[in-house]
Length: 249
Image (tube, rainbow, N blue to C red; front, side, top):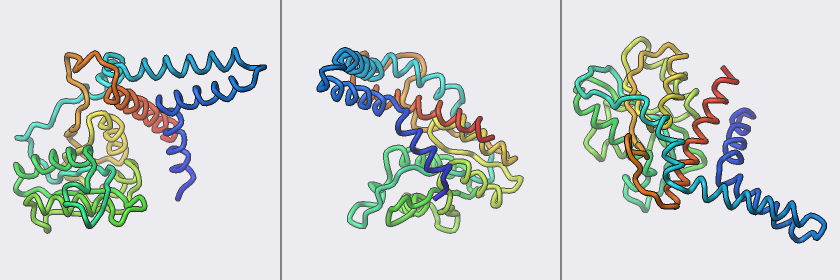
């Protein structure tokens, strides 16, 4: 596996709010056991705990994520396209599970948006992508199985099983779509970064964002919860991804 890919994953993990908070509190606890560094230990634990509370609070999370998710409109179903491409996400491939249950929640929402568009485009083709990530089947294969289960003819589906990230998905798609029009389906938070990669390849894409985690004009709740932390982590991940995209352009 490429060094750049591994480095990106490593930075992406350790720079996320939960990882940083745990790291700060763990270091703080270690220092608390060393009498000489108790003050520093208490400070690190306090910062870690306050940061965890801050990023788990839904108003904070919404402020971080909403500008990323709601700067692109949803796809107009009357817009004609030649291809509908659904970008990869996590799968939990298991022969003992129903086909739909093998897709993560995010992957399923992406696929359903792709099928919604495809059903309004009788002459269009569906492209699904994503590698196996040590699974028994690739994300592209899981997508294709689920799409067939949901009524899409197999001959309308093209699988890209090799791409490991969005940049590789864009490169692989270019060989298929050429100068045709593509409805690009991915999570709303991921869409700005995905569009940039596809535009770098000269692909004529129309965004079709899905899986919005925030509402456009109001907060869903004022509570501290895992959902708030998830939104904060998503916002951080995408901002880091955009920074990486800029550095490697």
